[in-house]
Structures are given as structure tokens and as C-alpha cells.
Length: 183
Image (cartoon, rainbow, N blue to C red; front, side):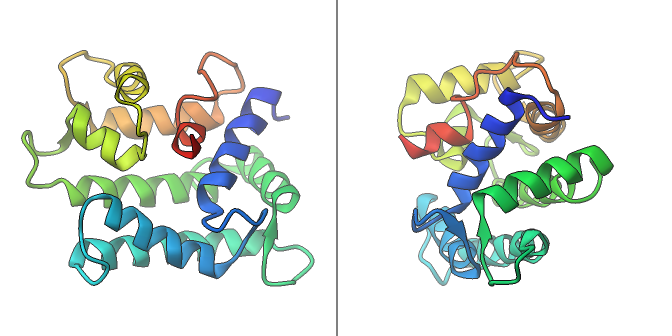
């Protein structure tokens, strides 16, 4: 059973993916999302980074379109929430778990040449999280940086994403991650 906190987090993820803000997810949202994500890193839309993000977002769409229960080629918020809650009950290594794993992999590949290989600095995290407010980004960064070494490791990021969505408690500020990107 999902909690209100989990549903709120999943709703934030839905809005993150809804690139045009029309209240449904379509293939075009994921095409735009991949471009937007790559361009947020200051890369041209045809750069290898943007191409990789577009490809990754399309893999996410390939998984998410399975939630389109009425077969209208779009996923409503209700279909998304119902489907992800079902996936969460079934197995965290499939469905949402697979989407989070895919997203994490591309993020860390993007920053392979970063200051400390295999990690994200606070600035890199703020960039990939698309959080404009530096203080808000740092707040989230500090939650994820469990060992407090000033960098987020891939393991810390994966563990946070898994806990953020799969932990039924409300220990996380649900406004802190995906929903922060919409402000």
C-alpha cells in the first residue's frame, strides 16, 4: 500500500516528466525531456550528451508507456500513479527501479570527467536536479551525501532514489527533489 508521502513523490516525478505541462505523459514529453536535460548542462541539442539523454529518456518512455491502460498513447496522472504503485508492490528491480537505475547511470556517465570521478559535486548535482535555488539544491545534496565528504557517490544517489520512492515513511521533504525542479 502506498502512503500519501509516496504518492506525493510520484506525483512530483510525473510533473518532472510532463515536459509540456498538459497533465498527460506522451512520447513527445520524453523526447523534449531528454533535450531539456542535456541543454540544462549547457550542451547543444545535437551533442553526444544530449543524444545520450534523449536515448535514455526514450528508454524510460518505453517502460512508462506500459502504464497506458486505456491505450490512448498517453499516460494520465492516475494511470501513472496506479501503475507505479503496482510496480513498487511487485519488485523494486523492475518498473520504477529500472527507470531510476537507468537515470542514475546516464547522470554519472555525464560527469565522468568531473572533479572527483564517480561522484557529483554540489554544483553538478544542482545542474542535474534542475534546482535553480542554490540553498534548496544544497539542502537536498546534504541529505544524499551520507558520508558527508562533499560529494555524492553513485551508490549514495542510487540508495537515495530507491529510499525516496520506496520508503513509505514521510522522512523526506517531498518538496525537496523532483518537485523542486518545477519552482
